[in-house]
Image 1 (cartoon, rainbow, N blue to C red):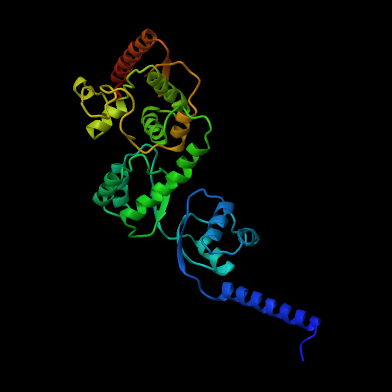
Image 2: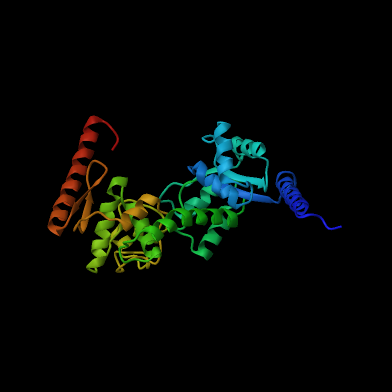
Length: 330
């Protein structure tokens, strides 16, 4: 005898409930695959929750944040590289994130070259510097290794380290370029190249938009950039007091010899220098010269620049003379 309609509905409801319970049980109790999750320094709890949901570690980003808040852990989630399992129990996941990854901390300052990055990685006990430099050269990573604080698992090889740094570059500088509506008529690579010069040239972060404006103004009138850091990069090491022979170096990176930008970045710039190129100061300045306070003075006319340059050199001589007379070392 066939079941009555109410009985059919009840059976269907019971089956649906059983299926839902089975799915919930699978999520909660069946172990998922292992995934690697990187939590960058300074990342918000909201972004971390969204990333965990995307990787299948949590089912709901909102519920994870609520659990972290209730447990007082929302502000204690430490950056690092974590090996987690998909469908982790909330308590176990929060404990793992609050405890930290136990990885190797590597700080990459703004303005460092790929070689300096490689040397720090080796000193930190990660990949050999030679391995990293070989990969950086093959993949042309100079400029694309975003400077920030990283956490790596011990023994991480050069390929994984560079991939992490390049991913952070895409997340920070790539997205910055993409969402900037009005760009200075440069490609992403050109903006990055000029930002690397600004990073090395500007002593004070507050001066970066003015330094960027000077170089953009020079490019606009087809004037050589004449940036000392490009010569230093061509030499292969940083030095003060470039000689005439240094300035005549035929390298394509030498902006005293060649017009326009060098073929690529001369270091790995930070977000500030990158933004300075995208949003330069409104200025017609074409020259700048160091002052005696650690900054620069900017000029539109060459004669004003030359006067300031002579005054700076005179000030340096007087300062050295004062130090010698006082018995201090210059």
